[in-house]
Image (tube, rainbow, N blue to C red; front, side, top):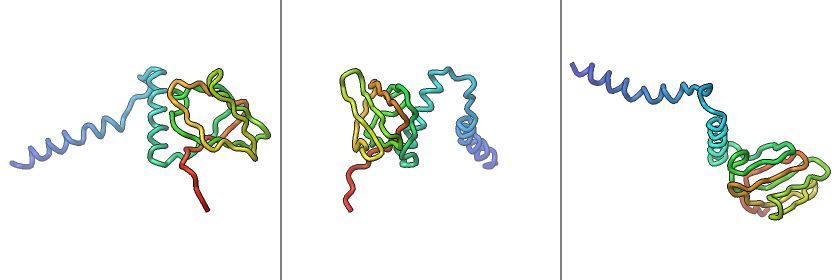
Length: 127
């Protein structure tokens, strides 16, 4: 007689897990998909699973395209300019001259003239 309530309780506890495992992304709007993608990337960064990302040349919005946070910027190209907003900051990045730390906040616009690697800033290290 106790088996039936236990079975029902087990099924009730497992239903949310099955619901989460079967997300219908086709029914989500573009904005919902982009928000979900950003949330996933942010969680991977927070867990330390994703430490860097290759970012092609282009203009990006922080909080939409790139998660807010502090980053180091490197490149393998000869010269890349990094512009934040219109007048907030301009940096020149080269193979020999990375940007050690830059803090990006939601709403910032950032533009790269070449491919860069953004790495989550982890503080200074001393050998």
